[in-house]
Length: 116
Length: 115
Image (cartoon, rainbow over all chains, first blue to last red; front, side):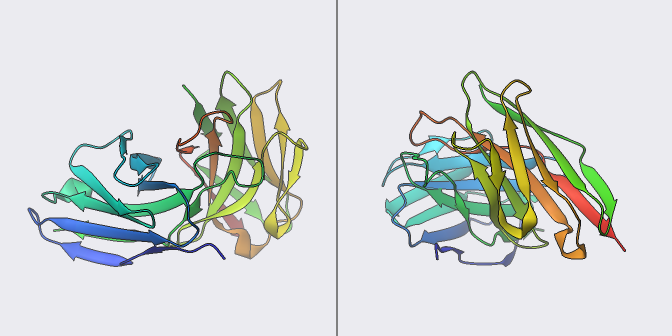
């Protein structure tokens, strides 16, 4: 089974803290993604990466950065956490080139972050 | 740019009734299409996908969806709802010809099932 593992299910951080959310996948996928999920807004793409050390901004990158030093690991960094970053964060991975049998993204369990 | 619209943020059905969750996409070429399900406090799980083969796609847990190019739709159905189907459902789209791209998601539909 494909496994996408997020390091924490629940996190509580203080305003102004630097926060690291870690994600590891074991399927040798080139693409990795970070989404943010909020009620009524669905999933919004923060950043994605299609190769080691490569990154692309998504729809809502402000206040976030990412790091991809190894193919299997993709980290989301909140440089200075704020209360409006309280949300569910979902990591996903997929193959770089979508072919008929390998088109979907696989998701981790999510990290529910609360910033107080 | 591609986009996905899910009609109805909340759908309620009785156990045993037909489930219909609507999804329309906007794309210049027929895209790949997906339905994902999310149970409370969990990640997303793939229900089914359309990748330009058969237009009627069968997925897990008795769900199916039909790709209709003329209507730019990919509605999700299940003949008989079960209590365990209560969850949030997301439709997603991706271009079939671009590598290294992200799925684009709709805003989700919450399905409630009453006994």
